[in-house]
Image 1 (tube, rainbow, N blue to C red):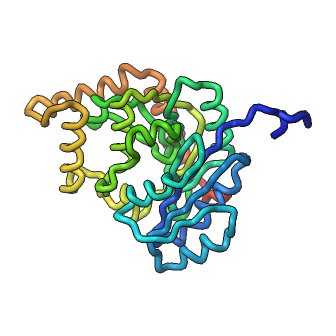
Image 2 (tube, helix red, strand yellow):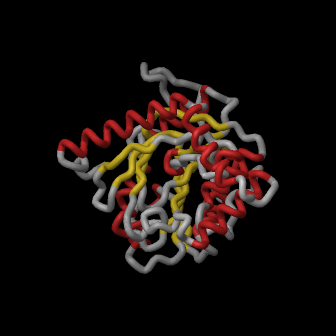
Image 3 (cartoon, rainbow, N blue to C red):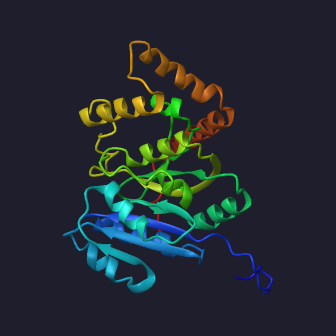
Length: 293
């Protein structure tokens, strides 16, 4: 590694391991892989876990040869697949990007420098954008403060694609709950927060989150109208607070949303800025052009 002036830099930034779980997302998979392998960061390990795609995904993965590590075997759901990937990961910093999402250029360099310069932080949460199935950039996503109480009351904005964490934080919390098929990322971050892991948010745009009909978020599975999601929210409420929801908690949900904004003016300003940017682009005629690597 050099310091930019041709001199050897003996200080090496942390190795980053990225895991992608893949299952029948061939139409988006190559864009995802390219967004990671084209990062300007050499100390990278990329692992793809495919549970048995039948849409040509395996051929796409194999076409990259030894530029990535591939695991082709059945799993017990997305969380189990991620656990399989991270079980062989050798990096000091972990992140996971779904097969239909992407990293933005320079994301990993930004992440590595932040972790290197702030040893007291275990998890960083960056910003990014929603994109649609065609790759057109839509509104900006800004993560909010994460505490168990806020998460229990549904007052946290997560952006998983822009979230990275130290290896120890993952392993000390036994990874993902493999039985969780609704919000395995949210439960992992909750477990981390309950264990005392230190979170930080950064304003950098790190990733793109694709919304489409077959994605979990885009399909409406993260709605209180979905019975499985309601059951998940009840379970994590108990985990976060040590009690079941009661009559007062509907009111406390509203209080939590007020706390989310009033106690975090930077987040509020960023949300206002993101909304203004989105409205301005809508007035100009809609989405931005399709994103290309």
